Image (cartoon, one colour):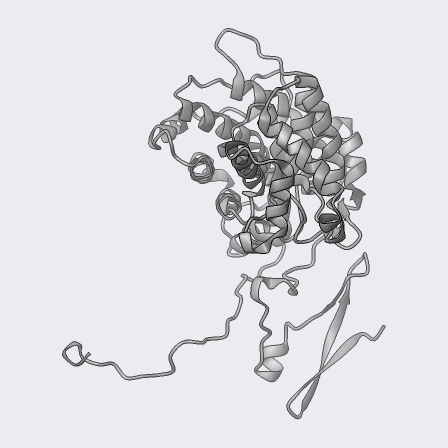
Length: 426
């Protein structure tokens, strides 16, 4: 392959470097395009724009491949844990036993919140969106750890990582209980990451809470499968904010705000909303599928298909079996979950959906699992944020190695220059 590409604009031809990634991805480097030609590129939504070179996550949407630091997601989901994967994403390698123990001990040491932060929760009304509380409190954490606002060495970075990773689930659980008017359940020093979160969510005073291992494993898998996903909206937000040398707390809080948007982090909420509508209207699966096929109705099939994965979502294959395990273990009688299973079967066997490759994605199954284990849909996007935290941290740290602030260009389409008119003549 040639090392450069030629671009001809008017009567000028320029050479643009070709960049090839470790998995064969190809890009044309246009970083000097404007200085040499006066032109920029226009790419709404950045669908064809590479914003960075990254060592963290590889996706091949056509082949249904997802790898963290080179490891296939299938192997990590089967053999690893969320905390191991967090270490992998942030520091580049799977931890040995000593490293894993040290990381786990750091998370345990920093999982408590300063008591003054509890006053922060009281400033929100009980019906405040949980994502608003999460982003606000994450940002407020920086005030309690001013020594971590500037990260100049590895030990300072590790200290910041431990606090954010440990406290994000504590904040999430406190947010949930505060909204219900319940007492706060503090983290347990002897429980592991996912079990401890369930303990803080659903525990009761003076009563030991031991969630079923199947449920703990399911939650851990959901977090692991969402831990990073390349340069999506929220990750790009974290990197862009971080490029200004904003601190890690502020940058991940910005990621929470980006994830809050229903077109990004709200997909599994949309699945439950769809199932609720089907139950409320007593819609038979056949009728609903017919309505989806008739585009005039404007009814969308939520939780099927994916923007990046053109064949299947590799995470969905993994989480489908976990979903079956959870529903079997809990033996729940829930008309919504019954609808979900019927809809899955109908879509997987209907030529209309199969030919369009509208397979169930990770959001479909994660929504079903979270509902089954008792997490309300208002908290679904918060769960997503907890899972995505190690990816955001890793991406922020990688971006921090560069010194150039992110600054996209635009094509101005407004009014040309015009003279000011005094108010009496307007």
